[in-house]
Amino acid sequence: MIEREAAVRALRRSVPVLPPVSALAYVRALQTGDAPAHLVAVVTRDLMAPLSWVHTVQTVRAGSPGDGPTS
Image (cartoon, rainbow, N blue to C red; front, side, top):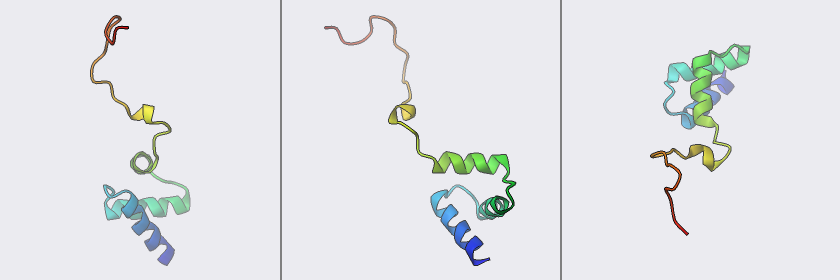
């Protein structure tokens, strides 16, 4: 029981958008091996760092051939 409470607290520190009830449900589900997909998605999104900084770049506007610096 104490380990579960510690896991919920640690999860809430790492994923603050997760409500306490959802954090408890997620930890309980991990113990049984049946975590709901929507909770897995939230936790994975917030805990997993991008593999490369390139994956975090967002295009502001699409370019076309000829746009860009000239040599």
